[in-house]
Image (cartoon, rainbow, N blue to C red; front, side):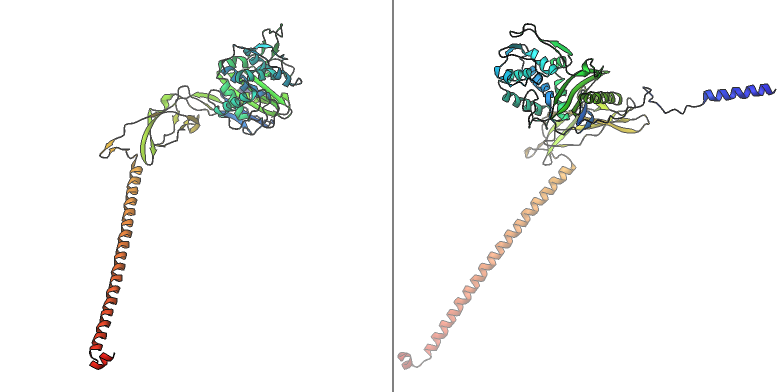
Length: 471
């Protein structure tokens, strides 16, 4: 009997151990891994931007100005592609060859060498060749000065407001500066161009032979995210990168990576050494890929809506607003599918207000409504036929508030006329009173003079005849 009881107790003990709840730290329910911590970036500035939504997923000193160094050649190549001269052959100027710093990066172009523009694009973007960048500028705009003007104008069009470029190759200059955010906006614009994406994502390239170089030139990208190296920083999701360095700028890197259909852009500026810029870029890519998801916002989430445009309390036109096709939102919020909603639109907008956004919300896993991001709306102006009124085709009061304001304005105008009328009447009465008083005074003086004359006449008639005669 004791043996049976002992056996039962031992079985129960073992069973309880096997079924006991685990006290290990909870893991992420989807991936089995803990969420990644936000990287501690030591470089001067950094930013991660989603290429589909334009959302900024990480930022540090993103608007602080730094020297761009060779990263400026992203814009040089983009302008070269957009010029439509990619298939042309250009001649290298003797002046450009003489300007090149032989201790810097170049591909040893010779004076009067005839080179394909497309080859110059690869040399500039992959090898940071200053002679290639300057030749592109001269071929596109005729002079470096004119090309620099086009560069800065192009940066303004992409929304880069803290950039000033002074040359096409990125050589150090006092007024040559940009920011991490501006370079991200530039990369976002450049990646929309198919030709640029192809060059940006190329690891190695061989130029065609020229009249000065019969064997051609071969080179590979300087971005170590794209290839094996002793530094061992190749990144499997990298789709392109552009490095930059000079003594003033430090180590810069503009790169892009794609994973699970999501493309990210990362900019590192003013790193202390080359390895730091790569390690921090990889850490930021891993963090953003892990913690953020892209959500497609269906246009049907917002019913077709017309919003009146108000000016001086009246409708002057209407605008039609909608969610653009292909709108993507980047968010780090886990939410239930099918629970998205958008904030209310304003009842009217003021003339000149052309930026409208909507806040997108959804229910999280705990059934709480949380904001998951903000999207911009597409706006189309609609001219409207205003209501007819006895006075002609006049604007219609926008709302009760507008009507009330119109009534108040009318009352104020009436009161103004009443006050002016009272003032005019008072002034008229005062003038009449003044003239009447003057007339009475004049009549009184005349009467006094007549009385005086009459008294003098009576007194004279009462004197004796002789005395009157003597007098």
